[in-house]
Image 1 (cartoon, rainbow, N blue to C red):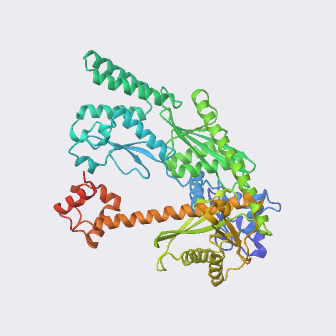
Image 2 (tube, rainbow, N blue to C red):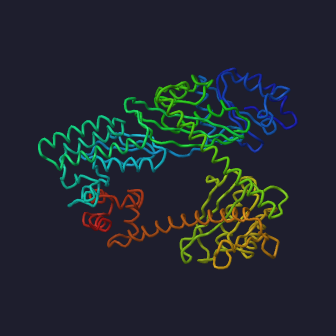
Image 3 (cartoon, rainbow, N blue to C red):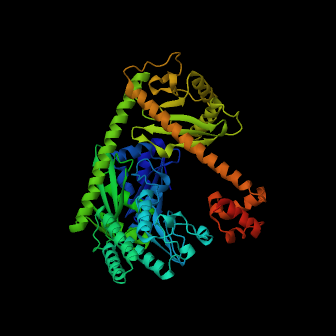
Length: 613
């Protein structure tokens, strides 16, 4: 570990850097508070670290780092590719100030097929692949893409979508059979052989073999027609028509069984957009756009390389990665991905034919998303400028935080906090607070409680205050919040309250500024007023969704306790074994009797309570 004092930082680090080993590894730079501000990798640590402490800084980024750096830690690795993997793992962990950060915390959903069951179902799956006897298809860019695909599978192949416990306990077909979305294997309306045929065709569909499926369906249609089984022939005729409609809705090259992520990085005016087009078995599953942050000091190449590594530390690597530009570190990144995922991949930037078409789509997505984001940012920036002028602030307001509370007649109170900056609403900074031990329905006390907890944490962590605190309410709410901040010795926080006007018409909303008796004159300042209302409405939405989730959980809990024979102890045993209320509802009688204290009669009671039909 290298340490330094403020008055001799450069000279001391220079001399100590000379003693570092010239081996591959990672260096971690921290500030006076011990917070990691930069993580870098090097083929030779000695040469790389020494380069920071030259008389003239090599770049604006180096100059900015040198103003804050206090310590450096190093970790030696065997190879440069190991250093690359470790570097990006640490970036994800520490979120350093001077590293590019790919803010994509999502795990992409897949379609799961459990092949262990005699009559398998195709279902939505997110997270780790737990089942050994299962196949997974994806990744899909979002939940909608998975639901849409599952919907198509049901429509074309008449596959069940019910839980195993529901399937086991059917005595007659459900509604899905009536509307021709399921073949009802639960009550033997289809043979195991025919259902297996449908499953195999569905798997082929997910693998992109649309043409072979259509050929098989046409063959079955002709065969049924010759046998004068016109109902079966009509079924296959309709399925062929459905498949052709779906085919026409997306670009598919069924002859090319390519698994690829087609990635484009586009930058403009200091902002960058990374678009990922997911292609599996020659079929486009959808796309996703991500906006890397902290890109001020980095080149296009550095942003792309860092984004790639961070993305594939959390997601599966396909056989091919197609880029819209060349990458100087292509080979080392390929090796690092091979080492981290135990799967070989090829990075390509010169493509033709269908790959070029995919790349064109990816670039178009990136350009359009970036254009939209820049326009939104410009609009928000202008609104923040207008609000700054309207409130008479000496400095431009850039970070706004707003609190609201939601409850039903005082029950299950939830307070919420949302954050807005020049990039828009910052979801990662949203917070919810369960309110307990206060007078039911006392909004003043609830918001004050949430603000006290929130600002206490800001104090403890040494974070900067937001430029403006917004509360839903008038002067009384502002005064209540002011007392809380005074008790925490927080000074200089600008506070406004937004009070609903006559007839709850947004046009009549009034904005009060702390320290002033009358509302702020917002005439001719519509954009500033609209911004405050938007933030207030978002806080209200976030509070309501939290309250509803809490209420739903409480109702489910009461629902379970209403079953004769279920007390606190048995309820606890059920929840512990199944992991939640929804899982208890889905459990079969056979599953329920495995719980301590639940006999067969009680298990039937529980099952019948949740499945009355």
